Image 1 (tube, helix red, strand yellow):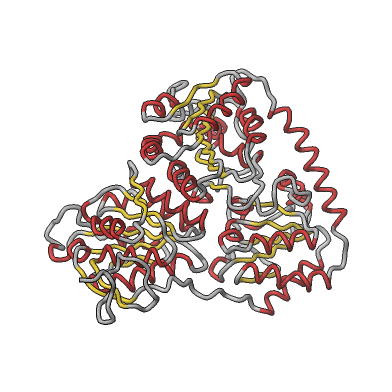
Image 2: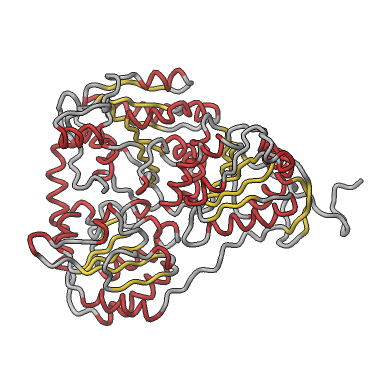
Length: 569
């Protein structure tokens, strides 16, 4: 028989490309892989489990085969999918076996929900024909994940898989983006059916309301000391170019957070993140785009110190459900963020009543003074090592295409202060969910998504304990990553506040100077411990040149805590 499909044959789901709407046939795993591939998915993150074997068969038989990336803990698979969604803006795919496989992915799904990261988690499920009789790992996942996903559903039959999976990816990648969970009973997973090939199309973009745009433009044009804050959704909505045009055309001082970092490149005269306090306390209008008004932004209250009038606030989001329900807003608008930026530009320029250049210059002066003041910490010769000194050595070595990943508490807080990416899409952190243990998964995702880029994982010694075993995954899949650890032998983010509250601390100490680099070496990577600040730079040079997963384990001063103004409550 010819390998070519005749006019009367139904194409197999795992074979080659299909035209949207074509009827395709295969077992549920093949149908699911075909839908994922149509939406741009290239990698399946997983840990082997019999409940989801059909997904592996579908990946192997696809043409070309879909990459299978297997990990040592399901949390890493799910965090890798979440980071893939953030980096590529195509939904990441995690495939988790039933029961504990799914529950091990819960934290990553919650993080994706908080961050607006597009991802699809496919779970195994005990067989339908045994449901209720006590099959292995029989549990109803949906009540567990419903509150932390955009959509959670069971595809009860093989006939539902093609359209159900297409819908899952469409929902995940549509504003406001986020995680979608689907599980399939094991007996139906192995069963065959047919269904339409996916077109892989996202939902139409939401155009902003004209009256809302006008209200925002009026508020901004009337401001004398405006401040713009750009967050993760500006990147996720592919609005980074429109945002930079807006900033430069108006000359508006800007702060970035999350994956908004790098949209206004580090060193740009209008990037005033290093003058954050002066900017927030001095602004008369704060325009927040693509990030919630949560604890990181004072719940939407800016300024107002010593009896001063707080700034007026404008909130801009990619979808109406993301607009703040609690803050007092001068105006708000929701919709496609590129359309918002471009739609505001002309009316703001036309209606602007004052010159913002003096205000921008004042903040630029504060930035320069902060840089000069920080240089003392960045070059500190203290023994034990001050954590800031690590960044004094790291920042000059970061390439423009760097992907920097933060997984830690106190140590990574310093990164937010000193690391300013040169390009958008190069910064990953846990976001407002604050989940430790995401770093190894994110590093795996970054190395796959940006194969030629410099990838650096910043690790606290506490955070490393959640996922360091997945260095084995980096080694097995030949994914070189530089891991830079600030090792203060403590849960630093908790130790200081507990001492402040009670005058003592408990359960905040870890073993002294643990040789985590030897753990990495035992798993097939390499590394070294650094106790002399002068050796941090040379160790980093060796790490970037090594071509293997490499951990630089820097022993730091537990007393040198990050000076924070909020504890997140």
